[in-house]
Length: 287
Image 1 (cartoon, rainbow, N blue to C red):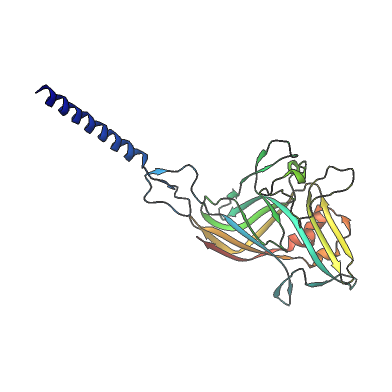
Image 2: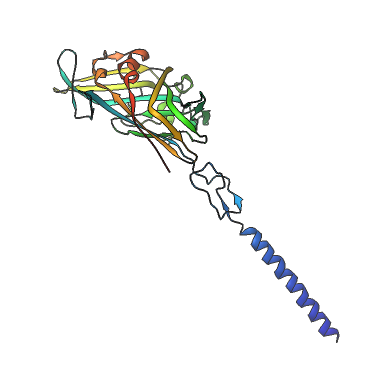
């Protein structure tokens, strides 16, 4: 009789343990997912919000070098022949510049900053320094499509604002000390690094290079940082709905660039040559 009682208690204990294990397993199987309504997609089956799994809409900015002839737009590539004021023909083989502090202007006057957190370091031994600032390195002859910012607000977009140049705090970095994933990383075609003897090196806000039919190269650039305001009005007010990417195409009339003087030029002269004449030609939204 005593043995039978002990077995019953054992069975009771085992059942309790199994119930606890089932409860713990159920808790550990709680499904996490994106529950932020501003994201591109929401996981309707998620029971709790994830820490970093949401994908948010962004600004996709396409910058295309071109010219307008008789009201028609023509794109320019490295093989396109351009005519200088003196009648010589040349090719634009490199064009790189920085834009920073990008923001959208809404019809009600609000300005929405497109801020991302980027990193840079002064040399290969320093720790990374975090800066909260939208920063683009545009190389329209090679990489026309750029992404910046997270669009977490809605409204009627009427214009895109930006500043030309490289913020001064970035000019202290050593280009060879950056990792490839950073906006300041030295790319083979960027030509923003000055390797002059006796210099530690530094970034330029812009660089362009032309090559004539005889193979003669000519270069112009903007040294150091710069901050010149730019504003591009959209062809029409565009309703930016929740969870939508904004896609803009900016046409850059780059022909006047070939007439810039050789060597260092003022930031204002570089901007006046083509960026002030640029215009947004297409606007769309997408998921």
